[in-house]
Image (cartoon, rainbow, N blue to C red; front, side, top):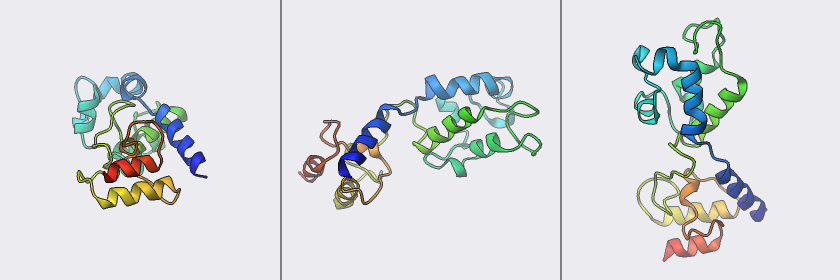
Length: 166
């Protein structure tokens, strides 16, 4: 079970979603008439910084993000995006949803917390050790998996816990 979880973690980190090569092209092709240059509605999707500063994405929570809400509305609903009869494909919506749920990071290798800070509270303490140990044993989840490989060997195991403690 532990090995299976580790393999899943390693595979998911290999196939993380990259904003510039996968998400921005969706925005460029489908949102460009209104939200790239002239920022209709105060929303500018021209690049990662502008997208994230528009407060329409809650990293790690697609269902609470207004962007996700707007792109999943029926065409007949008020506020659906893109407006009119245009709509994103289910694959595009799924990709955006996954990107948001992964943390809406700027690129697939970006980690916005320190190594070992698996709960993202900016403090390395016993809580990080407990959460990492529970995750390795298959008894929990991590908010920031990117910070879990504390020793950098691309394998999550007790060695990461030991190094975090030291």
